[in-house]
Amino acid sequence: MPPAPFPPSSRYAGVQVTTYTALNGRVYPYLRRRFCPDPDRLAQIGTHTVVEGDRLDRIAAAAIGDPTQFWQLCDANRAVRPDELTERIGRRLRITLPDGFGGGFGGA
Image 1 (tube, helix red, strand yellow):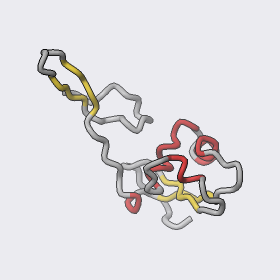
Image 2 (image 1 turned 180 degrees about the vertical axis):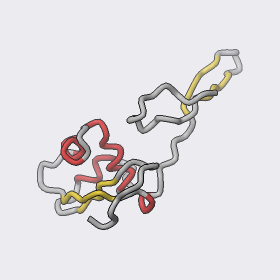
Image 3 (image 1 turned 180 degrees about the horizontal axis):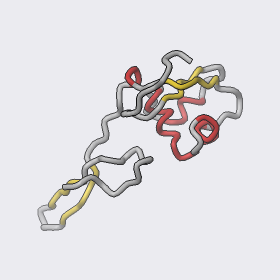
Image 4 (image 1 turned 30 degrees about the horizontal axis):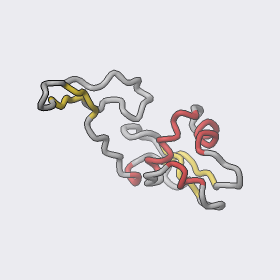
């Protein structure tokens, strides 16, 4: 099946849609698993130190220019739960380009 019709900025862009056929014959489409990229391969473009009251959507808006791209921060910092990135005051978050983009300068 072709990739799902998600915009290029979506974390699901390029993820394949497949189907499951139940015993009753009903067909259920679903997305294949999305494998997160290795954060060490992502081009780092900056950092952010978490302060009291930080929210991931606001950090993404300031660092990336779009609050809906918070998932890029999750990918860059090995976060399974987005909220874990702002739980500890003083934590330094890596700001990176999405997978497939080069040109970062490493250790901002």
